[in-house]
Image (cartoon, rainbow, N blue to C red; front, side):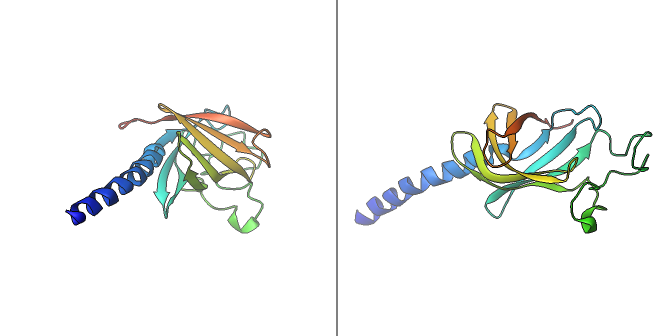
Length: 159
């Protein structure tokens, strides 16, 4: 009888932790970024790795530079050319990890992450909030008030 009670207590304590972990995984999947006039939009795959949530670019609407590219790279595949580290400027944008370190904070929120913006070569602090199939991604410098929010939408299978 004591053993059954002990097993029941352990199971009851373990269930909330398991449910919380599953809730955090709600952001796992494919997300379409907000469209940009020059670059179109991208798809970012968010995945869990070593207990944190990460994200990488897996699709670009415009994967090559425009014919009027001012840096002379017209028609070439987009690379991380704005990176402050010259050794990294040849990295392809496709497959580039741009999000790292996010932890689930409950209530459909993730915090303590960073997001890298290949268009300016800067890394920003970042937090995210999920509302249905819309992910609000807020990048900022220092405090959250000094930033901007983009709405990303979940990409359904087959798109």
